[in-house]
Amino acid sequence: MMKNNHLLLKAIQKYFFLFIGSILAAAGLEIFLIPNNIIDGGVVGISIIASHFTQIPLGIFTFVLNIPFLFFGYKQIGKTFVVSSLFSITCLSFWVSVFHPIPGLTNDVLLATVFGGIILGIGVGLIIRYGGSLDGTEIVAIVLNKRTVFSVGQIVMFFNIFILSSAGLAFGWDKAMYSLIAYFIAFKVIDITIEGLDEAKAAIIISEKGQEIAETIIARLGRGVTFLDGKGGYSDSRKTILYSVVTRLEVAKLKSIINDKDEGAFVTITDVSDIMGGKHKKRAIH
Image (cartoon, rainbow, N blue to C red; front, side, top):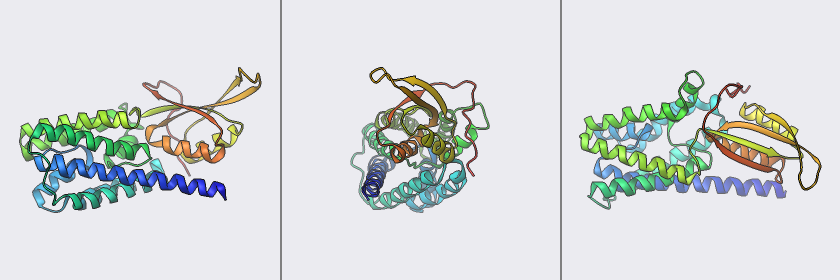
């Protein structure tokens, strides 16, 4: 009973922050960036340009254009991530419609770029931190990463340079340059919000239930786990240490798996700047 209540509270916390993140992202877009013809990258950037030319509400584009990416990524990333992303995208689509009639807070393009980028970055950072996403292009990047030599970050950057360059044709090249500034500000704020934006994360887990945790990571995430022998410096007892590398989008799910199996497990998760060799590629989950 207590475990069920704990899981319920964790779920409420997760979706609360996904909801708040969506509101902040929508506010950054509709109150600062869009009134000054500044766009974001990814599917949101494509949606802003499409909405500008068609006069169809932005919320419709952000929702409809993301759906194919979510279906595409369902088997690649997992149900939990897709559900969290769908919730976040739905909330964003709703709130951009709510904020749209509100006049922009400033006509100063530089101020709009800075503050819009900051607020958008906090919103997106919260969503990523709690296991969701607003950008379908990131799902494609994760899949392409398995088939090319490029990292997820490099592929996303390529997409966004193309999209932000398109803003030059739609709104003028000065606005395209402001859009690029807003994108980099948001990128750095996301980095701060989720404490590291590297695609790969290394997890070291010390638990009495190491075998159960390892089997669940392999089954639910499709990631390999290495067992290391250790010895407690204080207790002088033998310890089994698990080592696994996951993507940043899988960190929330990894934490959930560990908490479900052993709330007292000792866990460290660190950034991985580069990976060579080994079998880091994700296995298919049946």
